[in-house]
Image (tube, rainbow, N blue to C red; front, side, top):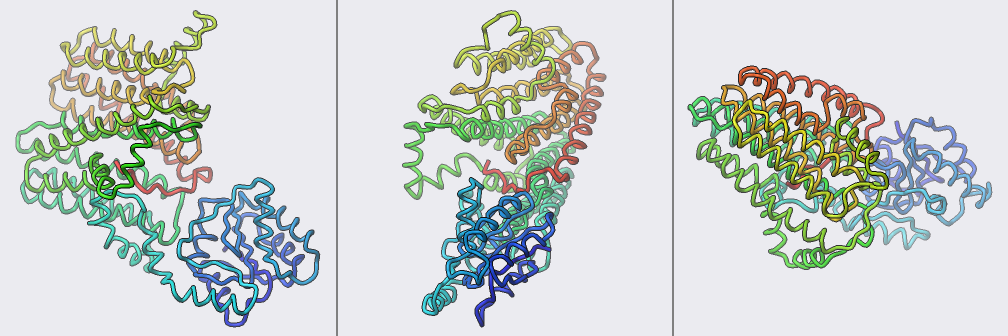
Length: 605
């Protein structure tokens, strides 16, 4: 249980102790400043501890926001400060300093907690201060101020604010106007019955998998049921994040579940559509795999661009200024959010088309819509990158290198390249993404435009391994270097798709779908670890599964050496092997104590 130390006896009629207990705190009362320090020292080091001014007046949700969010080691609101185990040492030092300054007598009129927060700031501690909006959190110093604060509390509906804050401030049109108006009440219903975001996330996954199963029946009734269930799954998908924000139930396991299940649901549904079409004699596996590849590459563009500019300095451009100006005009905001075909609009389109048309039409519409959205977003980001004068950091370069997913083959080639050309650190400027693009295009084109079993894809893959090494030979700090990871994803996934299609054997494309899904999981896992400031997956894992250039070369060699039927079996075995290795290590990480305590709220795209 968490412990709250109240600095003095609460004012008669105050609900402070009850509010703290309702939030899960064991309340202890300090009689003077030195007693505060003693009570703090008595709290076990593995517990959250809070110091709260006895005169605090405010909404219970203000206390909840300030004292119970698990994502921040230190947090404060007016009149209250809290520390998790990671921030405990800093809090102890600040309390000792405040006690020393205030003496050992009765607690002073000035707020002890505000003094503690000032000491934390002086020490350079990172103290989170949540946005309270209209919520009240104050420490009145006289009866009149206390009465005014209480009136302010009564004037604001705490529960209405809590419900409103459960909804993301920036979301898509469909989600904002067709889902969130009622899903927030589902979230509150779940909270009052003790359900957790993880349980709702799991329910969303199961609903989507049932929807995929319905689509796999290949019947009109199955397609209609699939469309309805897919929308239900999306409602639950919105609800889990709203429940997390409503009750501040953020967790390491929740981060992993929410970060990966959206993709698992969507890609499983693509497979369900392909299976359903096959029952009617229509083979759309290539379309389903193409949709998964395109969607994954879109996400990698988002991730790479954001990481490249995460902490860049002098990060301005005329294009960005124009974008901000457009966002100030109401209707353009919604149009621009819909153009990128975010998850709400995308799932609504898939659900409606599934129920009303055929899997082939649904996948064609998805491919066209995602292609247009990708063109729009990528072009805008390229323009921003070319027109801004940003200085990117070593952290950004490290993140892009991790997203590149280079294996032992590329690392060895980089060392040979640097050894053979002393003084050269790599390609200059815009040559980096250009070389990555040319290598990617070469291996995909060779795989798609030559007969199955020929040597040209192997040669192209070897050249691609060389260009991949050249692209990552120096830190990725160039204006367009964030395009390197998306080009690598397109090269690897596109090669697998092309070779499986060229094999022209039943089952090759489903096996390719499984392989790309397993590798894509590894790439998404890398992204969310970086977002949680936990670093990339361990180097041994990247080497064990070959790195992106090694897997690409391996697949082309298998296609050259094996028959089409044997190639299908090899793809299946490779998919199973990659999935087992990455899933075991990923699960170990996300359920461990070292995983970041965050809850991903879902991607807009």
